[in-house]
Length: 160
View 1 (cartoon, rainbow, N blue to C red):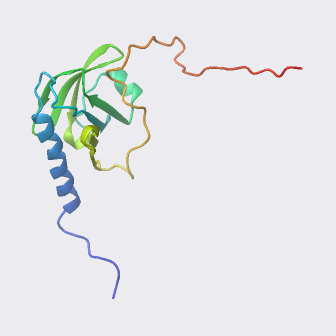
View 2 (tube, rainbow, N blue to C red; view 1 turned 135 degrees about the vertical axis):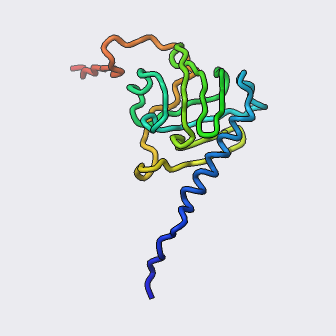
View 3 (spheres, helix red, strand yellow; view 1 turned 90 degrees about the horizontal axis):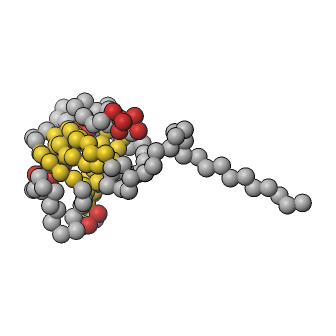
């Protein structure tokens, strides 16, 4: 007798992923377009920036070429939820931006106020999300760095 299980002709993994993404759509659909969240609820949403249908400003695509996390908490507007995607306005470094994110591009949804989290697989992706910078929206406006680096040089000299 073989330990190999037969391949399923029913795509259970895809069906479950689609159903869980519907949870994200339903939760976002219950939030008003004016950005009012009930109680202490707030959301971290991670998505693949290069996934089909994702529309974000070019400067964000350059900064986050693979994956990005956004925060829906204090400063967001024009939240619109469609059957297969959502749109939202956010600020990044003081610059307003409109994002269009298909639910199929979402890799994680977290509501830390109630310790709720969902992880998703994106079709054709590897073993999971790659490391990326923390969410950058709603933060203080940063001064641009002229040379594009964020390295600080420290020169320690030994006393003789």
